[in-house]
Image (cartoon, rainbow, N blue to C red; front, side):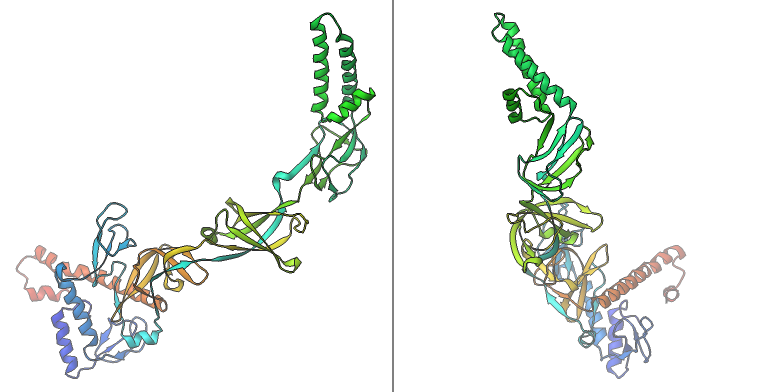
Length: 475
C-alpha cells in the first residue's frame, strides 16, 4: 500500500491493524516503501526495518488532512514570486516584475517534494543543521605579483636622419644614465649641409639687416628662422645651435643625448653602424617607480576594487613588507593564467624592486556587511541552480532553490535570494535528501494523472460500466 496516495481513512485502518499487532517494515532511506514482510528495499537495496506502531501513517495522514483544510485555516510560511521561486519575503507585496506575491503554506514545498525522516534515521545519517543568520563577510586574498617597468617612463631613442655612428658613449645594456648624458655621435651628410645652410642664412641676415628696404631685411630673418627650425626638427639642441653661431664652424658629427634618467634596457647601436631615420637605437626605462602586477582569480574579483590597500612582501629581503593601494584593475582576463591583473604602484628609491622579480601580495578584500549567509557546504550546486534543504521541524525537510553571492574565507556563502533570516538549513547528508526529494516528486507526478483518468474514461464509456469495474481497471 502506498501511503503517499492513500486516503486518510485507509491509513487510519492500517494504523488500527498495526496497533492490533500486525508488524510492517519500511526503508530508512525511502519511507514510502512499506511492506508486510521483511526484505530489501526495491530502490536502494537496503534491509527493511520494523515500523514503529502508527508513526509513519499518522504523519502522512496529518499531511493529507492539512492539505484538505481551507486556505483560511492553513498557516502561511512565506510569500514567493510567481515567476521566480528564489524571491521570497515574510510578508505580502510585489515581485521585481510587478506581480503579486503568492503565499506558500507550511504543507507546501515549491522547490520539490517535502521529505520526512525519523529522528533516529536522521541521527544515523549524520544530519547536521545550521541557522541562517546575518554576518560580516570578508576575505584576504593571497597571490603572487610580478615587478614591471613604469610604462609611461619607457623611452625610445632614435635618430631622425640617416647617418653613421662615429662614437658610442653608452655601450652597455643595464647602464644607468642621467638626463642629458651623451649617448652617441652621429655623422650625417644632411646634418652637415643643414649647418652650412644655417651659417649662410646667418651671414645673409647680418648683411641685409641694415637694408633700406624693410622687405629685404625681413626676408633675411625668415630664411634664418627656417634654417634654425630645420636643425631643431633633427634634434640639434639649442645649446649646439648657439655654439654653431658663436664659432661659425660646422661640426662633422651630431651628439644624441639621453631624454631622461634611467637604465638602458635595450641597445641596438654599435660603433660604425649605418642607421636609417627612425631606427630605434636605445630604450631607457626609469625604475625609480615600478608597477607590480598581482594575479587575481575570477572568483576573487568581487572582493577587490581600485583604491584598496595592498601589502607586498619581499621574500628576498627577509620578508620586508611594503604598503600601497591598487591603482588599476585591467578589464580583461589573461588567457594563459585565467587571471585578471591588478596594478599596484610603488616608489623604488633604493632600486630594491627590480623588474621581473616575484613578490607575495596580500589584499584585504572589501567587507560585505550584514549579509545573509549559510555554511558553504549547505548549498548544492547543480551548475544551473543552487538548492538548500530547510529544516521545518518534526523531521521534515523542504528543498529550496536559492541565489548565492560571494564566499568568504571562513566557509560561508552569501544568500541573496531564497532564504529568510532565522531559518535552519541542512549542512550534511543533503545529497541523500536531494535524491529522496526528486524521487518523491517524480512519484507524485506519475500518480497525479491517475486521479483524473477514471472520470475521463467514464465520460467516454458511459454510465453503463459499474463503478467497481471502472476502479478495478486502475488497480
